[in-house]
Amino acid sequence: MKRLPILFLAAFAFTACLDTEPEDFTSPSTWYKNQKELEASLASVYDPLRNCYSTYLSVEFSQGTDECFSKESTPKLVPYYYNYDTGNNSVKEVWRGLYKGIDNANVLLENADNAACAPEIIRQIKGEALFLRAYYHFLLTAYWGDVPLRLESTKSADDVHKPRTASETVYSTVIRDMADAGEMVADIQALGFGGRVSKQAVKGILARVCLYAAGRLDKPEYYEQARSWAWSLMEEGVHSLNPDFSDVFIKLMQDQYDIRESIFEVECYGNVESTEMRETGQFVAYYTPMYSKQDYCVDEKTKKSIARGRGVFYTTPQLYDSYEDGDLRRDWTIMPYMYKNEAVWEQVPYNEPFRFRWPGKFRREYEINLPVYSWGNSTNYPLLRYSDVLLMFAEADNMVNNGSTPESLEAVNQVRRRAFGFDPLTPLAEVDLKAMSQSEFLEYIQAERARELAFESHRRLDLMRWGIFLERMHEIGDELAAIPVKVVNESGQSVDNPIFTQSGSGFPMNSNPTGPEMMARPFRNVDRKHLLMPIPELEMSVNKAITENNPGWN
Image (tube, rainbow, N blue to C red; front, side, top):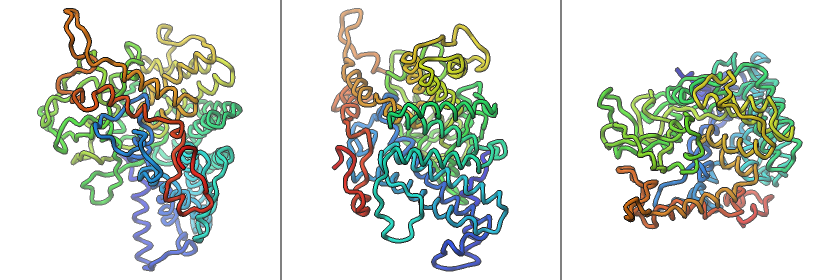
């Protein structure tokens, strides 16, 4: 079962404080007195993870790529449609949430030493806060480029006027602070779960940060650092691949931790009817079929209630076709069936030619936190898995050594062996890749990351750091728009293209615009300005030290 998250512990700390000091305002000088109050403060630093990854970063900021597209016939003003502006609420909420976490971290770091508790506890809590402050800055620079670097808490109204800092400086500060934090936080084996920052999580995220720095800053020297951090984590031997790809996500849906593969997770807790605490996530609903008009339907065999989803996305045929025959990940990542009835849970296999299917990685039939509800549940969001570490190492090693090496091939081949149902650690000639040139291996890894990590908020930023985002998006849009609605069958008759046709699928072939035009629309909306998010209108109006927005957003 899932552990009570840090937010739950913090609730008791706040209650204790209010019982003993019922004041309208508690200043830092009187608040940080003991471990409970430190934990409560740390909870406020973690909180933006759940707030931002519930929907915004897990769905709205990360989708609208070659993984999937929205099936909504009426476009919403959301980032995955590329029709938003500087006043967009999602953009504003992520910006505000990340800086709130940064400010909370700064307050904690400035006052934690005042607490009367063991030095090792203070050190660990400060390490987690330092890492999270760095992680939030990393997300900000990854999406917005040059952003204010805030390393001190806000103490007066004048402190809001903070100019933008060059991305290179932000990246170097993030890497330095994360490395320092790694010396302060606990080992994941001591924690026993992935819901808090661990030494292993720090190493894995540092590999990611260095890869982003190498690509976004065009600084190849960062590849060596990325390789080093990933290799250090691999050498520990603490983590390995779960032999069953689907079991990784079944465990997430069943609120189970599996630290051998799932290294760092965003904690979600409770459901819509929870009374003690409700810190739910909404991403599962977006990546789940809308098979019922009610909040749930019933499995006639087990009589179990299955929560419906929002059914927002269809996967692209390009993602489906990228999987090789025999790759078991395809029919888990992409649903191989639909549901027949709106009231009864009954699986109906898709016709093989039909390509516009629902995402399937997070399956609600495995959900155990009852009663189920359509939009909110307790499933944790995976921020870092060991397969990602293996692929990051292989990519960085390839760039450092100008081609594949035995070490980088073994890292990728472990992921491949698992994908085809074999022991990840046992070499297998018929599955394993052979030596490749740098460009060949990079191209393979770029496709493999989509197959392995789809719907885990990596793809959009991956495409950007590789410098192929615009090219890939326009390519997908052109390919989708060119798919013919009608084809000629063997009898010479004009019939619906079977790639679109699946009885009961709800695919909007008769909508206006037609299916191919609707699918291509977000990809055609993409412009050069979408390489960075706009500085929110609210921030521009308040922070007078920022005088210009990102290119194309003024």
